[in-house]
Amino acid sequence: MKSYTVDSVALLHYLLDILPDRASGIVKRAESGAVRLEVPAIVLVETAFILKKRDEIRGTDVRDVSEPADVEAVLATIERGSPLELVETGYDEVRRVTRRMDSLSIHDAMIVASHETRNTDAILTTDGAIEDGDAPTVWD
Image 1: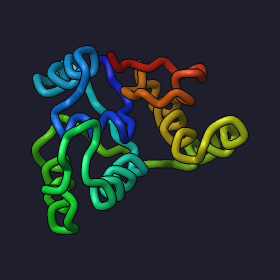
Image 2 (image 1 turned 60 degrees about the vertical axis):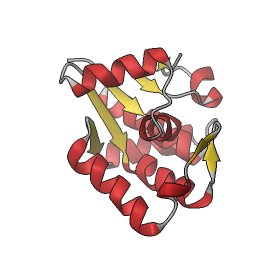
Image 3 (image 1 turned 135 degrees about the horizontal axis):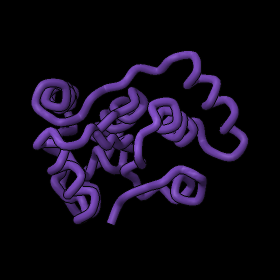
Image 4 (image 1 turned 90 degrees about the vertical axis):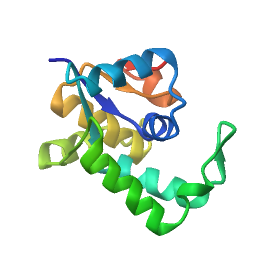
């Protein structure tokens, strides 16, 4: 079964239902059980932070999910009612992060390390630094 690592941008777009066609198609396949969507913990933490701090994303109002209780509701929805699977970070993955910190931010290094550790097929992201690296990405 194919699997994909989900970045924060993809998770935010998923929650706001504004994913582009290719990424949306992968999510639809995951909702039917045909593929796996893996979410590193850093993605959930960053997404919660962004939802608390921003009023809009790409023209979409996010104030409805900006309160702590609403962020908790979003996390509960992801946990129980979505095709997204939270993946744990192990020592091998941390070692991979440290090897990439010279060329990527810690966040990006964690996303790429999660992808590499779990051998996912690609990363759902628009992040230019990840796209410029050697990890395959999917978006448009």
